Image (cartoon, rainbow, N blue to C red; front, side):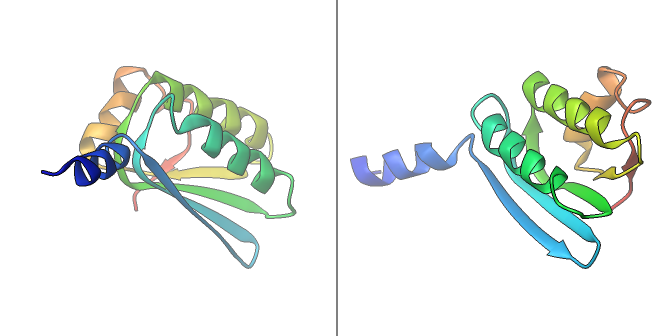
Length: 116
């Protein structure tokens, strides 16, 4: 693999992409890739932006997430705590390896998950 393609491939590894869209009273934030220390600031900024709107519900879709570390778990927990006095935030379950992190850390009792 030539140097330029190798660098581009390396940038894609470990990256987080966000797709954020308002649909009526609901706002959906889709997470794609890996949520870790590198991507957490972007997600936090987007969550806070959406929380400041009049969206009745915020759905975080973990279906395309491949990896999450403790930074990502903490970030989602903090956002849920800010939102859930009104039951405003819901998480769509991600793949088994992602959901397993929430099970191991016992966050499944503290976060509102629904099947995607």
